[in-house]
Image 1 (cartoon, rainbow, N blue to C red):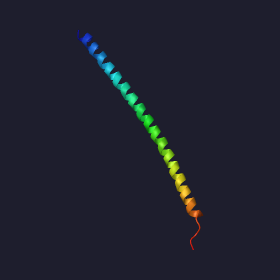
Image 2 (cartoon, rainbow, N blue to C red):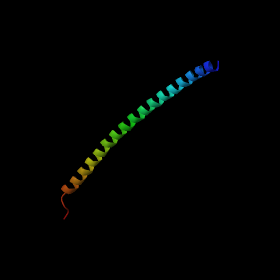
Image 3 (cartoon, rainbow, N blue to C red):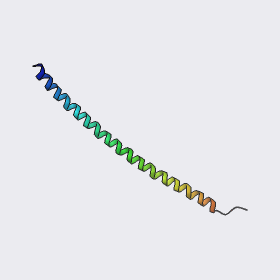
Image 4 (cartoon, one colour):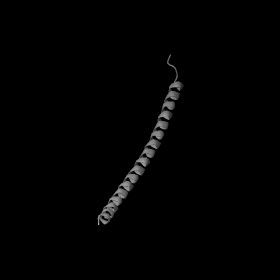
Length: 67
């Protein structure tokens, strides 16, 4: 009887463990997606800032000198 009880309890516990692992895997995938999205956004913003800085330097150089 002890083996039957252990098998029954073990099965329920195993199912809960599988459910928890699946939940954690899904959460991990969502977090990895967010990291990739944020990195792409960061790269886009960095490129825009560098372009803006470059434009600012060019406009500063092209201004006539004050005399």
